Image (tube, rainbow, N blue to C red):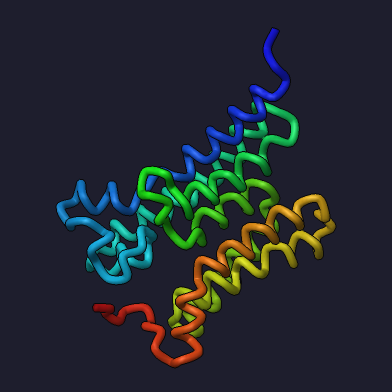
Length: 199
């Protein structure tokens, strides 16, 4: 007889495994752009891929990081009742803390957008609008990402999806923690803007 905990455990592990795929590193290596962790900020996300000067690679990284969050939610939901939020959060954690990279992952913005969009698409639209609005309005990638993350639990609450507020709030808090160095630079006025180089 199959233990009742086995399928939920599989969903959690599957979500984490999907989220931990470092597409930024994989794509830059395949393109001959070197080790992304030795470029710019050393982050594995799309913003740092953009610092290689290859906009196509950055766009592909953004899309794939978003899709892995969405796919985790959809697969989790198909496997077990309530599995969508479980797998989604684990995909987000996997992106931020991948075991393959000694838990030094990305900031989680694109993956969180994928998770939020798959859980409840209207909140995903709010996330995208806030992200792009703040990104192009301030030219700070970190401000756009953090603003979008905070908007997610607010949108879930406003749309009446109270059941998804804890999940989105947890991801937002982790994302803000991952941006703690950016917050420090913003306060000092040294945070680089999109298009600027970072040694």
